[in-house]
Image 1 (cartoon, rainbow, N blue to C red):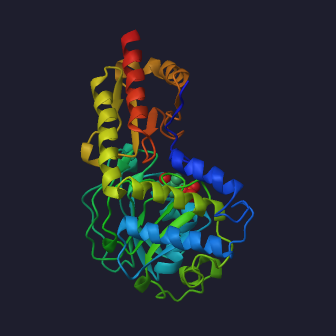
Image 2 (cartoon, rainbow, N blue to C red; image 1 turned 180 degrees about the vertical axis):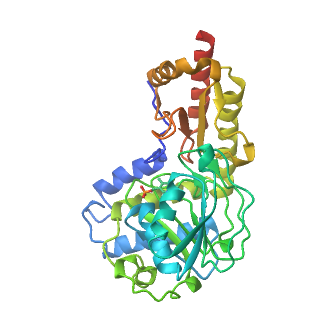
Length: 356
Ligand SMILES: *Cc1c(COP(=O)(O)O)cnc(C)c1O
């Protein structure tokens, strides 16, 4: 039976990336060596790194003045690197979920990190709208897509202070005006590559303004100077990211995939609203994520939650249980998830409805 991969992360990759990864594991760039055993200083891997950075810049239309870095440590490492590198005294955070809360917690270790608004009292089921960002903040931090709760900030904001965004789970899913951001970061394991590599897009003029001493590994300038090779980069994950970016380019780039993503999300949200057994967790459609779609059983059918989970699994729907902190269901509809998988899930939801 065909398996449909709705896992939130690590998550589905294009078949192209899987096939090219297998080839690269056997013979990387005609070297006769595996990508798993080649020096990161070899000319073949240096070329791979440079091409991956070039594709990254091209597909996101990154203006000059920005650097793209591939680091280790996950998005979670960026929770401390951002304040260490950018905050002298004060920063501002929008608390829209568990990842945003974790980012804020780390920032508090390094200065006055202010929570400008939070949707925690409603289990993060909306994006706060009216708040004031202190003008003396060194930056304002947002999480554009809240992977666990299924909300998303889909418009690039205009703010008076440098804007920093965790885009772990929506990078490359929609067009972004990078010029509005001072720094964008994320783990690659949601929409780009296997786990192990973290991307950072940083406008160089925001760096070098803090007085605290920075450990080399936590200093963006060190990694810029080292061209993401200050220490050994996650070679295989970078190679896989290159394959995904080639696939995306071939497909027509970010605006082309965005159109498909919006269609996929609409198919699933429509079914959640139509089906008497289910209801969406995010009421305002403006706040709904197009990458992580969350729903629960409708009030009269709560007792069917477990049996729907089992039924869906028996039909090959993998990874649709909600995050352990929220329960219910979540289908991640990342770039690589084909529309047929969404249609198959909708079919299963309809079949379950007709049985109940
Ligand atoms: C998955 C995720 C993280 C954590 O990423 P790690 O690479 O595991 O540290 C952070 N932020 C968001 C929005 C995520 O989806």
